[in-house]
Length: 381
Image 1 (tube, rainbow, N blue to C red):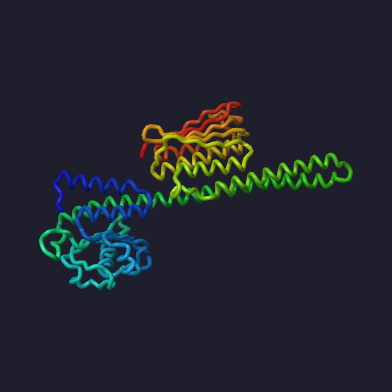
Image 2: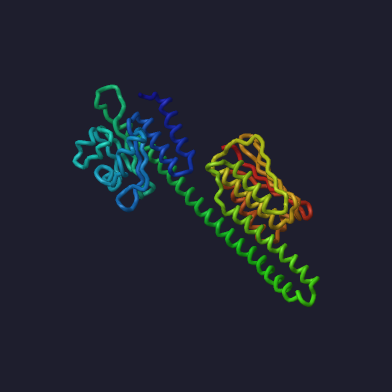
């Protein structure tokens, strides 16, 4: 199949857009391989990400069925042509890979390949992957007609953009890992402080009750009632922390189901009434949904721990091609311009950073005694 100039450019453009659309490394690798095979009309395509031990940390193929791939066996080692590409970081275009002196064979279940085009994917001086194609599909001879200099040039362009997409995906995953680690550290610190204070008060109150049992039973009874209240508050703190520590099921359930579940649990765990409603929402890119979830969690945390609210309402609605999240409480409120509480101030900074990080905006409406509304809007993906 051959593309005219306009259709060829459109195909390249579509491939590059598809690569930049994904944030997960595995999805990026699959898209690169599928795009390369389609653009260059090859029967097989593969991409290997080398590890530091002579093998491949990841290896993705296109054109090979799952059954074939399973029969082939373990991932290849860095040997033969693959090793040469990674070591010398240069393009390899061969009429028949099987006749090359560096060819070392392949497993019995491996499909037969003849013409071969491979090149490294580089990030600066570092080789971060190897992209290769085999068996050019064309109508000349039974053995194929081989890859051309134009194919090589096209694949080089694709590899340059693949390097950018792969690097961005790696940075995104690393950033997400750090965010999760920071979130858990924050929650662990918060849990320690909150529960330690409750348990310390609980112990003092229990000691006071014990000292009063004989000489002032009425006061002792009051202290024991306070013990029950403090114990219930400690349980609430623990439940809320467990909810926040539990990984969000965004990948499996999506934003609405994840938020609805967390709101239901928080409603049970706290004396305040917590509600959730949504209308017209459409799925958004993963980064935007994660940012909306984290902002909702932070806003809920502030409302339930700091504001003394009796009612907290969470809504998610469609707005244009994007969405708007709103968390409203009837608590004590504050002056957003004169925030004195360090925790609340840091929470607002964190929420603004999360919103701006995905192209969104955050607005805060509050006043002493008037409750608080946190609103985050994200554009369409």
